[in-house]
Length: 130
Image 1 (cartoon, rainbow, N blue to C red):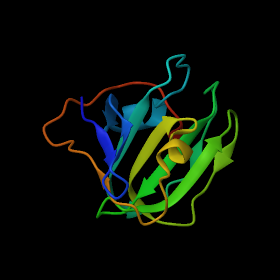
Image 2 (cartoon, rainbow, N blue to C red):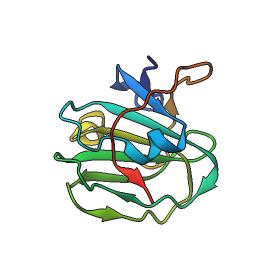
Image 3 (spheres, rainbow, N blue to C red):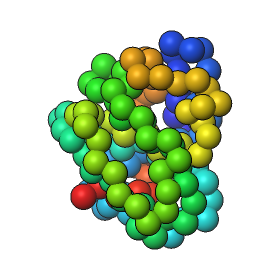
């Protein structure tokens, strides 16, 4: 499984990351999941990607990345059963356990590193895109 690093701060955001590329895996995300883990959502182009936390029972942190894997927006403490529409377009969305943005001092403009080429697509549960 890929590892996610904040290359700017030289910190590790997550050791075990699941990649969501299919419509189904993006739709389910962390829904109904009890295990707190990290997901990377990969989209076909940069766009505004609204999220919801229906049927996700714990808060998470979310990073929105552009095509250069730079943080363009963040949502800390995204609470269960709430909605969020970012102001910035993103190509990647990273869902992290609550508190990881603060713990790693990740900020807008930071460069995030991960390699998802030739990775198996995992179908797990998460905040789904609308």
